[in-house]
Length: 134
Image 1 (cartoon, one colour):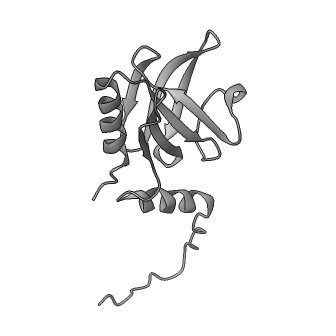
Image 2 (cartoon, helix red, strand yellow):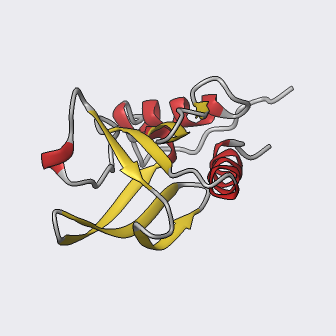
């Protein structure tokens, strides 16, 4: 099955907006591929306002969240891989959800491990081999 994180993030954002709350996204900036304004990073994390009034071209797909926003008046493209999403919550009251143990979360851990420890290339040449599969 596909990981549930993108679906949960979409649902949480919609739920918070329906309840007149401001959805915020907590992001682990140590994850490979994160593109956020570095001047707002604190303790290896950044919190981003993802309400429609704060972002443009907001997109959630199976791999990442991306959007355009202004930080200190300077426009920037933001890119957050799903593995980097720590939580979605309301600024007003903290209602929301943290991530890491939901169904499919292990997919992001495996993906990160493969990026950090890729398999060495297999030597080419020589005779092809066959392997018995039971």
